[in-house]
Length: 106
Image 1 (spheres, rainbow, N blue to C red):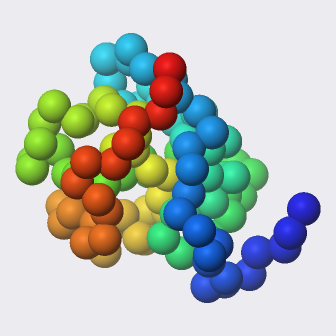
Image 2 (cartoon, one colour):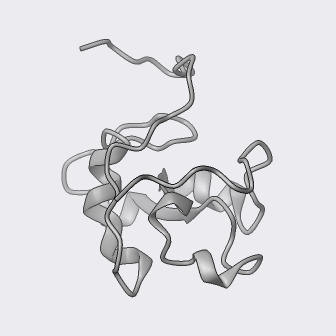
């Protein structure tokens, strides 16, 4: 297993390992997202700490709900982030996120 350090980002785009679907609310995907992103914030790579999971980490929408409410519970639109990064990003879309990324085959 390779060791990650701060700002040591992968050279290739993330390929989703999971493809759950059917949940009515995005919070239901929390455990899937935790595993998907190795218990780390996708923006700063901070690792989740024991006992601080719910307060310190959020689920963020790559395309904000205010921009496209139909993607609110779309797994491919969700990422696991720390509270600090989520506060900085706010309701802005991710600038380099492709608008029509290929969906995970189910």
